[in-house]
Length: 60
Image (cartoon, rainbow, N blue to C red):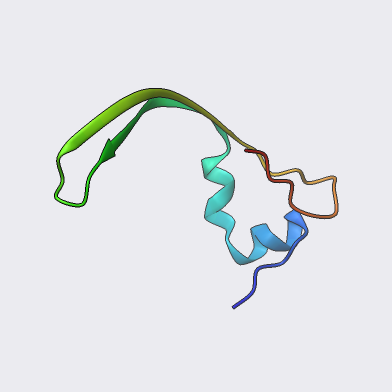
């Protein structure tokens, strides 16, 4: 299944995604394949759906 590229159609397919909008702050933790803790870093993620634009925008 391919997802629509405009925000309004995307929300019709996956309406629960709108509940994830916001700023998420916390810790990013890395573990190896055996589950051993490797490192931790502070993280800040901003998730927003741009309803007035035609396609998704991805920032890294």
